[in-house]
Length: 348
Image (tube, rainbow, N blue to C red):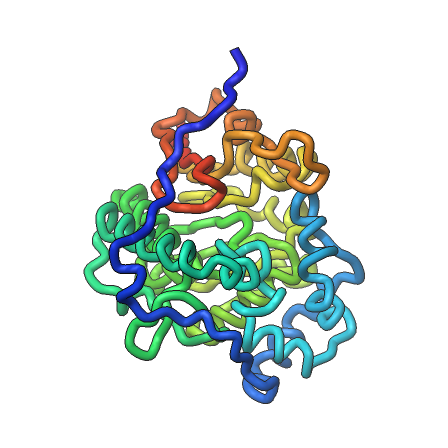
C-alpha cells in the first residue's frame, strides 16, 4: 500500500503571539561596516571562488532564482555589495533557502511565523536543558525574530540548540573534545551552538556550497569562533576550530577524515540530487564514525514539481551492515508542513 499522508505536529496559534515583541523590520544596514572582516574572508576563500552555481537538486533552483545577485557579487568580488549582503545576511538573499523561514517569506505571514517561533521555543524548553532565552539571542547579520533584550532569537535557533543538546548527550561518554562533521551547515547556526555546547573543546567540519560558506564564515567570525578554510591546496583540518569545506572539494578533502565522532545533516540531503546524495553516503559509509544523526523529509509533498526535487529519507543509501537505526521520530519543530523526521544511526 502506498502511503498517502504523513503524521505531523500541528501548526497552532500561540497564546502569547500578541504579547511578545518581534523584529520583522525591513531596515537594512548601510554597507559601511565590517569591510575588513569581509576582505579577510574573501582572501581566505580566494582559491575556491567558483564561476558558476554549485548546488544540485532544489539547491540549484534556489541559487539561480533566489540567490543570483548575491552570488554574482561574490564572483565579481564586489566588496561593497558583498558587505551589504552579509551585514544584512538574514534579511537578504544571502541566506535565502537555509533559514526557516527566509525573511522575504516570513513577512508575508508574520503572525503565523511569530506563533511558530514561540511554539518552537516551547518545544526547546521541554526537550532540552535550556533555562533562559538570553542563550539563544544574536545581534549579528541584521536578524529577525523574537526580541530578547538587545538581541534577537532567529526562527532556526531553538531547533539548532535542540540538535546541539542531543549531540552532546550522544557524545557524553566520548572524549571531551569531539570531532563533528556537519553536511550543509547553512549560515553556521548549529556550528555556533555546538561550539558553545562544548565550550570550544571540539573540532567541527562544515561542508557546504561555496556561497553559503561565505555567510557562515561571516556569522561565525562575528561570534568570535576560530575558522579554518580547507582547500586542496590547504588540506589541513585544525583542531578546536570550525573548518569550512566547499562541497565541490569534499571528495578530495574528506579522504583525509578517516574517523570522527558524529556526522550530522538537517533538511538538505533530501533536497539534493541522487548523485550528490550518493557521494555523501560514500563518505558516511566509509568513515569510521560512531553516529549519523539527520533530520530530513520522508514524504514527497510535490510529486509533479520540477523545482521541489526530493529524495525520501527512508531511501537514503545507508549501509545497514555498518549502522543500526536507533531512533526515528517526527520532528517536534515547525517547517516543511511537518514532514521532517529525525533519524539516529549508531555504528554496529
